[in-house]
Length: 137
Image (tube, rainbow, N blue to C red; front, side):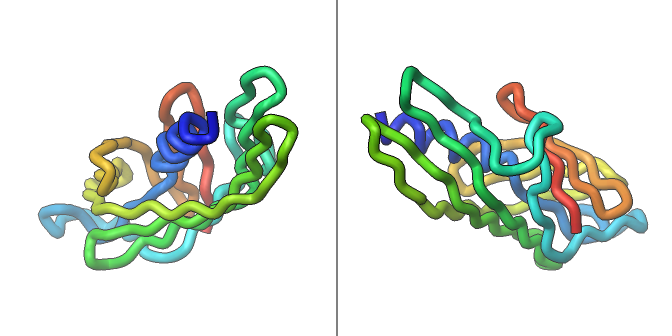
């Protein structure tokens, strides 16, 4: 069970990543470099339960996305996992590259997952696997 919950968290949280340069072609005016903090999942403030199977559950406690100007990003966070009555806190980290064209961004995670989202006024919104994640600078 623990392995499957980690996969779910990683997929949901892999949505949690960034954007950066002005654009792939250097055209446009939007920049995204900096640190973003995950504020809500499906409109709910953290912590948020992202999976529950019987008495087992996974909650996202916190997450930070750092977007670099070299078209890379890194995500780090903490989740609370309850399995067979035992609750523990686990850290996770993800990374990859991105492209940004205007306000549309595409995230290519090192794991092979690809996600899309939008950036507007310091707010990054990503949608994946039935979850909407909102990050703010």
